[in-house]
Length: 595
Image (cartoon, rainbow, N blue to C red; front, side):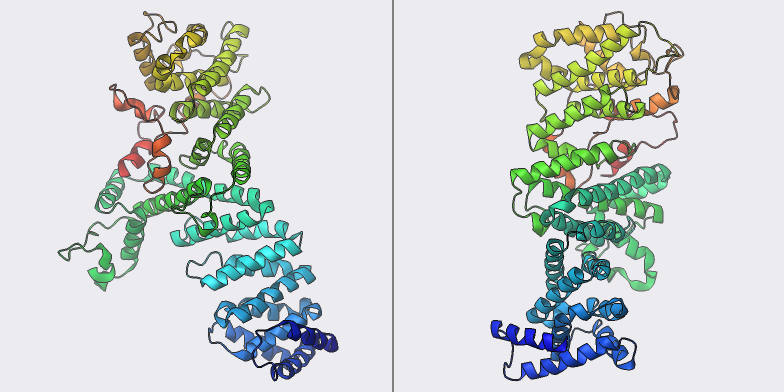
């Protein structure tokens, strides 16, 4: 083994023009290789332990030492001699701050880890974990980070099984929602960069990212319902003082942890011109946690939107060049699959679904694919009922709120939904306990909600003549014995009926004598079969694309989002926020008032 290594060294020296002191280095390195080979052969004796300790001490030092370079070059030549006995030595080598040792040392280190991972499968997880670990540190040296990505890219090319090993490593390494916002965003940027150069990892990494976004998103909705009115007022007041949520949350957290004697100059950037601190509101721990998680979700979604846009604005370095059409197409197809698998089944998500909303705005084909997916799920008799109901809510909310969806797209979606509802009432002429009507009411609710937002466009756009057939269908559905206006949420029903009575557009849909009924009144059909009326009310109140209120990332949504813009009651902006309990906090109102 030693003679082989020396021969490789001699050949390598002739090909290398940047080795220092060419006349002396071979002799030094030859002796180091020989000693290193003997050390590896005697993995349990004192000399081996001293070498391990040598590199362990080096892991906490950034001082350049040519002896370490000699050792690493020697170990690089002796990669085939490593086995499982040398795990502690390999760990010490991987923990070194190798970026601080210079470009030459970094190049040798990259060759060493790539050779080790490809030659010894049992070291592959250890090597990959050490590389991914650098993706979490917001203060990591740029050279170290670049070297980690370069090493990882080489390993993925050399070892076909590396991708399958890497996915669970990323899953374990992804920061918990309670971890610092800088750790969250740095890891997200690096994960997206890996997905960029390792196409085989694009879907699993996007899936992991969306799962983490949903985790934060749902936690926010849960926490806001647990905040007291005083705590909500605290957060609102603090944010009025400082519209940078992250800075406010971080500063507030620090103030809570620091002794009061630390003084106001701990955060000099928060002092006004008079030397007085704007940080005069000390938030409760629950309020701090709420504001902090809002800031995390906001920044992480901004990064994701920038990735989809291919924009330089707030984008990680890997996405500063605009993605080609094929790349964006692949990303959107993955996101649609992830939406169906994860987002659609997460009831309390409020913001994560806007990844699809924004992505679909970049191409009409993406929007058509999304609507096709939603409609096919609604019409799928074999799908779970709650999935079909949620898909109907998404379809109605999407065509209502997405300003970029064409009149043709809106009308086609309404035709599909109304066609299914008409078929339902035709097949089931009278309410019966044997018929599960939950999907029916969800579909009608989606149609009403969409028409409230898009009726004027359909009329003024010259499509009213073509849409008259759908209005006749809607009239039959509304006046059927299933009485959907007595089941759908009252706010939506009242606004729809107001428009029907006041406009010429809806005269075909309802009769003048139709009056706005009370939602879930005593006359509500007793045949809402399945999980009961409380269950259907919960899902009928779901409007996935409510107004987007996150401060930093809303710049991607504002221009493509349709807000309520008539002079009717502003209540309609919170359509779908009716709750069965008067004491239940409305997330949209609370977050909207805060941001």
